[in-house]
Image (cartoon, rainbow, N blue to C red; front, side, top):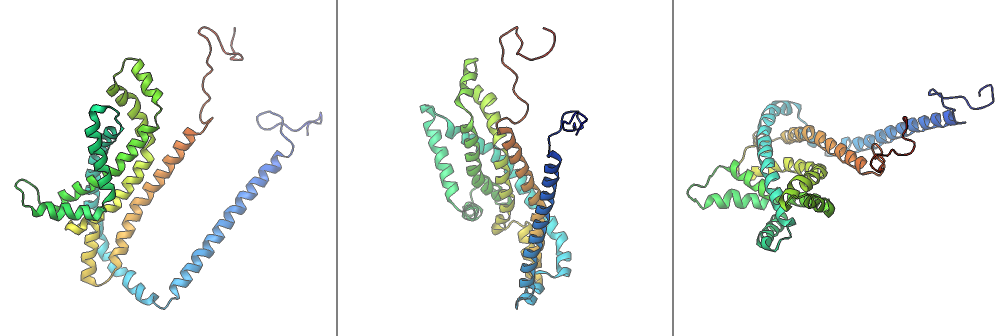
Length: 312
């Protein structure tokens, strides 16, 4: 309290509110209690799970088959080296997927009657490759096309692995693109047309930049799935991380190499998942009403908004 009997000013010189310090103290105490409760409950739950697993009758056999330290450390370098093949598959397929999916999304979003055959073909393509299991597509391309012995057609399974992943994921990513294009209000394109831009120019310079920016988080989710699905190409003979772990497992009669493979994917995938969550939260904050700086006051030309300050 001040000498005049009012509330004490805060650090900024403004009058403090009665009980504000108490409320802040209560909020901090509540946060600490919530953190402690979360830690204790987590410890109890995982402790119970660990106790049940370790004391089960089959735990010694599972421990010997999946948690052999010597096999783990001896197989890890070769498994990490084989993961470079997965990275190559992922990077090459990702570039092809982004381009092909964008073309499909634009074709499906077109409304011109002249482009109806292209729109129909794009729709059939998306429906077919979203309906077929990925392993089946990889088998058909990796064994069926190669088995035709067509002149000039490559027989390298790495090539057909990239083709299969591109065809499969382009269908899914095109729908993400199309959702982003549909989320842009038609007035954006209409305003661009009123400024003299053609329909193609409005799509390129106005609609697509906004649509792509909106769909970055779901695109990252799809590419996390693509990174994991690169192991499916092992079925057609590509020696990547999963095939390498199978080779080591067949030589040691032990499943520990699969644990090493899982660890590699966890180390790579979890940071990407957290990045995706951060981007989703950032986009949600941008879309939230009142987020960011307030919009400037709209006034008549040559006038100032009331209370703008300065010398009139």
